[in-house]
Image 1 (spheres, one colour):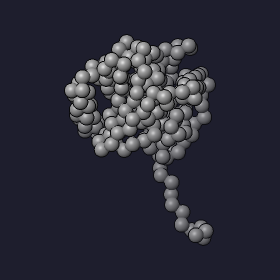
Image 2 (cartoon, helix red, strand yellow):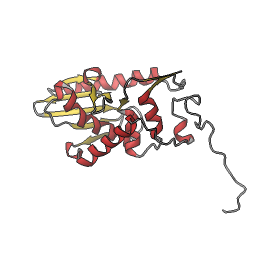
Image 3 (spheres, helix red, strand yellow):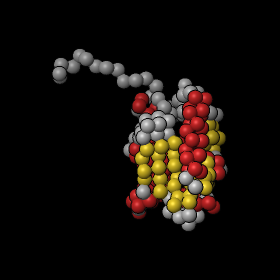
Image 4 (cartoon, helix red, strand yellow):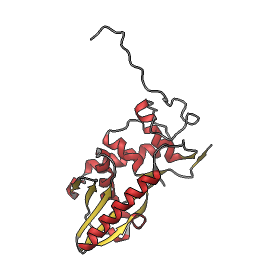
Length: 215
C-alpha cells in the first residue's frame, strides 16, 4: 500500500549514490520522496549494525570531548531544509564538534569506503550551517571515520558545481514529472520498493552465457 505525501520529502542518503555515480535509477528516489509505502523486508542485520555504529560514535564523541570540543550527536544534528517549492531535504549528521571557529562534521561508517560517503558529508557541510542553530555561521570541515581509516574533507570542496548538482537533483526528485526507471539487478537487489510499486523491478541475477565462441 502506498500513500501520497503532502509534499516531497527527501532524505540525504537517497541522493548521495546518484550524485556519486554509484546509482542510476533516479525514479527510486523520486518514488520515495513522493510516497509512503510498504517496504520490502531486508536481510540486513540492523541490530548488529546499530550496536557497532553506536559504539564507534560514542568513542569518537569522547575523542572530541577530550580534545576540548563541544560535541553534538545524531538527533541533535537533525535538519529539515525547505525548498522554494515546499520540498523538504532532511538528514542528521553523526557528530558535530566545534571549538571556537574550528568546526567538524563527522560521519562514522562501519562498512567499506564509498564515494557516496564523501558526498553525504559534503551535503552535511553545506546544509548544517543553514539549518541547525549550533552550526550557524560556521565553516565546517568534514571527516569520515572508518574502522581502520579516515578521510578528511576540507571546506574548500564546497563549490558552485556541488551546489548546482544538489539543487538540480533535488528539483528533479521533487518534481511531479517521474524520472525514467533504470532497472538492473545490481541496484534492484538492494532497493526496498516492491514489484507491486515498481513493476520493472529485476529480481534475478543475469545468467552466464558460455556458448558464444568469442573467447
